[in-house]
Length: 293
Image (cartoon, rainbow, N blue to C red; front, side, top):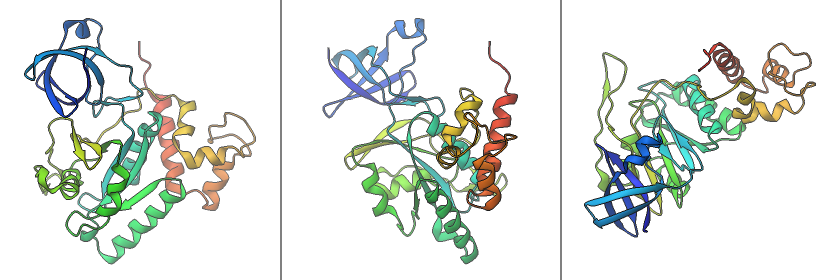
């Protein structure tokens, strides 16, 4: 049986790429029975009489999967956040980073719309960028209008399945258009009434960019830590995880424990205060989460 990769899911159809050909497939009823939903990025076994009439028979084991956006087997996440319009949010970025780290996906922080910043805003963004680089993250500063950072971003996509994710209106589609101008993806301006972007991407689809594939995903602005346990959170902050090696007590949650290296680093400024505050806020959210039955 032939095998391929799902590159688009739309209206009950799955579009499978195999050796340059795209076959339109449906899922067999066995998936519904076993509560398996094929996802974009899945490696699948299928059968097809022609390119219009195929059926997915098997979904191969996934190395990871995301729920929002629904995609599997992601190598890296390009977390797209705008410097302005909407304003850069470290709290929202840290929330995305935690979920990406938990799913063992390599994050790349991409800050867009640098051409729209004032001198003061630019200085602040560069300060944040330095903080996140010190935490171990790759940070790109870009502009789809001036093409700042676009050439530097391209090599990071080679040979990878990358998901472009972020808040609505930050310029994900504009960034993809800058990376591959022939795409002509639809973009919308920020809603001045709501102060946030309109959703321009309606489905998940893998798009070839150079030798890699990227997924433009529907924008969303709320993320919940449904799977993450309190003891997992430490590992989702690489800078805190590194500092925690110096904590006196193993399994330290960095809240009330004595001789905690993470609290000491936050107090001294070695760890940015906002990173520690986000950690403690997320920890409280996880502890307050209602148990699932």
